[in-house]
Amino acid sequence: MADNVMKHLPLILRPDPSRTVVRPFSPEYPGPFATPGKSRAQVIVDRILSLDEAEVAEERRVTICSLDERHRDIDDLLMRRFGELEGLTIDKAKVRRDQALLIGAYFSEEYSFEAAALFNPSIVVHPDQDDVPEGATRFVMSLRAIGEGHVSSVTFRTGLIGADASVTVDKANPTAVPPIIEHVEQDGAAGVKLLCGGGLELSETILFPMLPSQSRGIEDVRLVRFVEDDGKALYYGTYTAFNGTDARSELLDTDDFKGFNMRPLTGSAAAAKGMALFPRRVGGQYTMLARQDNENVWLLQSDDLLHWEGGERIIRPHYPWEFVQMGNCGSPIELDEGWLVLTHGVGTVRNYCMGAALLDKENPSKVLARTPRPLLEPSPDERDGYVPNVVYSCGAMVLGRTLILPYGVADGFATVATANVGAVLAAME
Image 1 (spheres, rainbow, N blue to C red):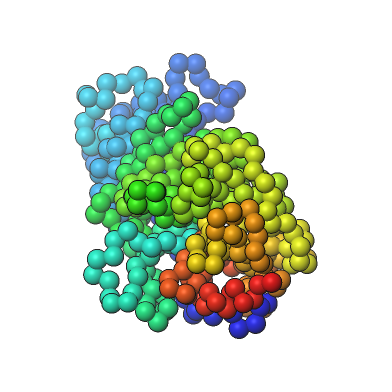
Image 2 (spheres, rainbow, N blue to C red):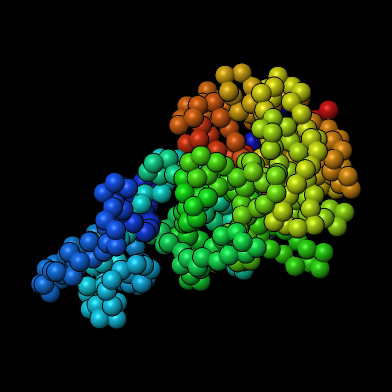
């Protein structure tokens, strides 16, 4: 490891199985047992509507006792779920409110979204810097959370970076709130608009799989604060959508982290993992790093933010710790010296280590320097976990000349390291 470059902070973020979100539950019959003209949902609803008022009240009481403790506005959520049910042969307008709430409960489930792991963080400056102590900066951190069935969701934390480069993370609210989902279509591709509620703490917002392309997970969000040529800033996050068979890149955007758009990326380059957007246009074009061959770091440019083709290999495995595979660890960071790119490399025994490269500011296809040794690698006390021998990040930030690098350990938990940018550059050759 490059000596005396990274300072490891005592901060550790671990998964908390007590944090749950209420999400849709839609039971169906296996194909051979399906009854034409009558869905399983209809069968369940008919059973619920056969209950008398006392039975409905008792079932409602039990439901509320279990959910009210750790969820906001549960009646609103269950009524919304009732309204989402389709294909029922009932007049919803004639269903009593207590029955509708109970039906909504039967078609919902509590999901412990971070029961198994909390890792692969990304970090950006928070859009709200009001009431921040002098010299400090508020940040937003995204994390990949893994729950039941090894399904990945996105969760968030906020915190402060002090004037002394200390990092504190706000305690996560025990309540988690599902977004209000509006399905949309753009250019023939399915997307979603998500309203997360202006009064929520950001840690309450959970983005779980909502589209068929994401049915088995939303993985490894790489956040970036993108500034257009006119100075307007918007937050983008490239992420991997996994449906159980295929993995491809999609894009979320937000200006305040209170609502999101999620859209698929198109083009041959998007049918892969690990895309990361530059924080501004380069040469008048959107610019992206990618690893569509699962071996090298590629540079892509496009006039269309949602469509990506071609590209060129710019960083290839060269040192033993990266002989198997190279990839980016988040979006490039603009320095006076050029574009700082955090990289991952895979070596012996599938060890994941992290290094860095410097790209030319005007021509980012030109690699100016690289770290010959890892900046971070699995240490004896950070080696064991869900996937051993892995340190990995989805995005860092630089404040002044300090690199703030959150990273995941063993696909299990997350921590943070810092470094002087000058020391990182000096470790390159």
